[in-house]
Image 1 (tube, rainbow, N blue to C red):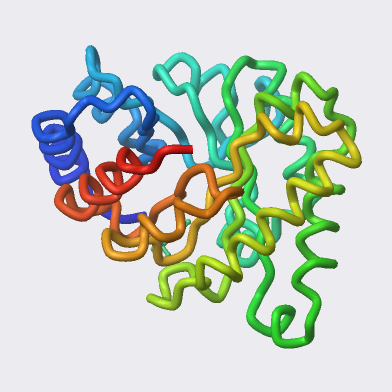
Image 2: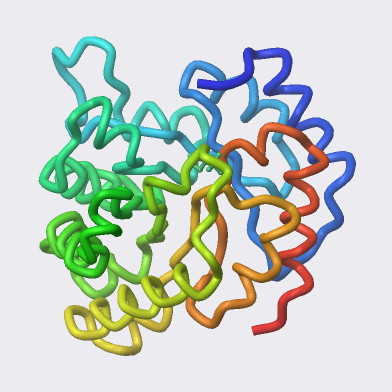
Length: 244
Ligand code: PGA
């Protein structure tokens, strides 16, 4: 819930003007739903994709205040973030809710970005692996291998989001590798190898390269540093320099 309409549109104009095309880096912006139309219009003709921050699972009906997959598609969205830790912590979304949304999103043709991650208390209690594995198992329940291959995951340790505290590359890699291992057990190695697993939580221009260089970190889900064109572009540039 950052930036109003004019600053959102101005930001994407700056990104479009200054972003050097790099075929190996896919970029999407996910503004608040009320600005999807304006930001989408500004992005027309660019390689930057449009995504939403949330969606409701039902196709239509009496769900005051909610937005459907069809509505997001109507606005030109390709992606939608599901189960961000703020949705889980502030708005009470459970793994079962995320799973219900995920099935609706995949059926609609939108590409989901499913967030998982432990709290500080859980990390300090040595529960990171258990928590993340449980979130993955329940949030991804019932997906076919083909659907899993279409699903982006974002590992976002809650203690690193908006706090300026980043997981070290080694801490993040350890969890990413474990997630891929779990995916391999459930969906097979070929699918697990294909799944994009992003890291999120205080990604910035000066730590993006090291994080993204880790073998199992395939991308970044960026909050604060995406609100300014300079830092956004620096992260895209850092990603473009990595050969995997
Ligand atoms: P941050 O946010 O980059 O500001 O930590 C990440 C997020 O909200 O997903």
